[in-house]
Length: 380
Image (cartoon, rainbow, N blue to C red; front, side, top):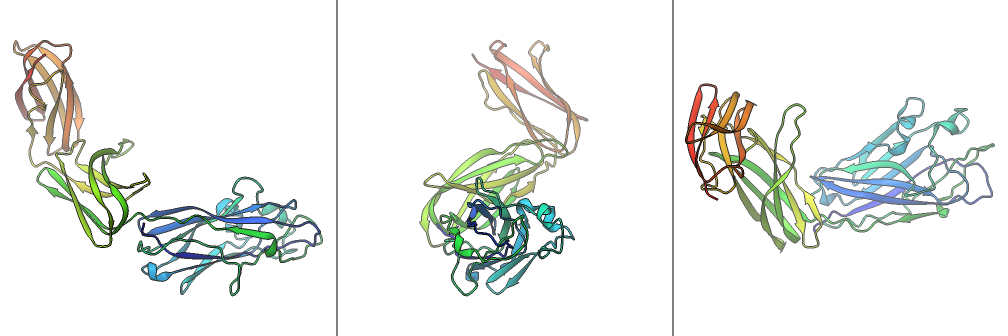
């Protein structure tokens, strides 16, 4: 697995009243994810002692191996469960600053005594589950090399510092970093370094091509497609093929797949589902193409002969009212397959003839001024 090496340093400042009760906590990194070149994770804090802990001012310092990133930036993408309480003007908000291979996140809140209702307005650190979600963090520009191996750092310089504040008076401050634990997460694998993924038009087909720079434990790629719907229409992803991976490789590998005659409209979205040998998987970025026919076409049904079902495909170069009917050889209508407006694109409709007798049938399409018929054969 190709992974990104990161080292995490946490500096959090809290305010605490003088107390004989030990205030203990656990800080963890959760929900590591990679989407494209954006690496994200959550910072959580769980109270394990009896005395309540309230968040005040805090500094989060994150270091990482910037050799594994291209022009990295550090971003606070959500302030966790504190929400608007620290984003409000009264409570200071939050800022982030990039410094070399370190990123500093500062959450600013008023000092003790400056806001009479400060204790009621700030989120208490939870003592259940994973605790309180402090922040969601994103580092951009991941190159997909190195090792994740995220670690808390509690030694100097830039050691983790914790101070707290509780809902009692008089207020005071106490450094309680020694009462906390910092749980290192398991290593986060980045399965394959995908350097490109493109889709292009090849007559009535879509040519998909992609390339990896390195691979570790790569079982292969499932290729998925969905029609790009407009308005409130909903489409679902469907698997259209599988391409075997190269397992382990330190050199570039090229892959391709031809999606022949996609149907369901004129715009299609594709993505790759990269699967490891152990079943873990990651999705690629999505690519979109527009495939518009240049003429009206009614294709021969497939399969033909058939029993009991077959598919009828047609192409529309522009929006039209489409009627698709089936007749027996006596000219009697036996089925209406379609009678509605359709946008430009490629479509197919299933015809199930389980209630009909063996024989030859005629199917006819009407789309605006375009009318065409073809024959199909049912054999039971």
